[in-house]
Length: 248
Image 1 (cartoon, rainbow, N blue to C red):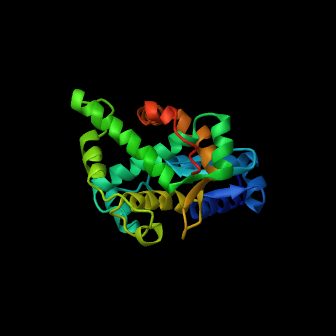
Image 2 (image 1 turned 90 degrees about the horizontal axis):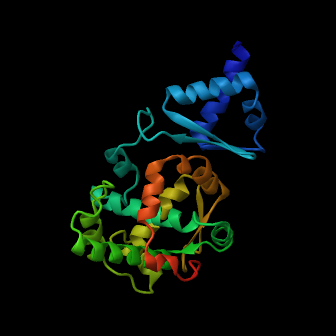
């Protein structure tokens, strides 16, 4: 391995650290696929606890769930994202994000529709509410529900039930992270910050439009994690199977 290959690999890797994605239009894209450069980039990624996702038109860098020097603990995440006030809010935001992912990761028709039309915050709020209402019903019959999956269902259900329900005055409410729509807005901003969605109509009825990067991350990374598939199954409710068009 020569010094030139190491220099090129370092440029590729640190660009990924900065931008998270390198697409086919970048000078680094073709450089990455040089065998020596690629081997060095993969070595850098492995040693730092990160993971490279390769797809035909882009490469992405993601942090491994454990053992990464770039892993973000709750305290640091709270400092970076003000909408995450407590661990119960973090857990609830995680449920919102997983509900969003489960709704787009179903079939090709769902992917095409959400890619074109997106999912409105109000539709996502109804979807999450149906889900948590179902969990609440299950908990009454089975208090241990969620323990096997290591999800604090009781706290999630209680926190959501006692959050303020938003009126149609979204423009006034959207900045209030203590409302349901405010929480959803905060969750979607996390995905937007990672370059995985586009948020449209910020001052009207906001919609989250998934980007191709998100679909590739689901296909090339999340599907390899049993934990993701388990969560996705938990996110499915009978109501969700017959949900209205999520773009509304």
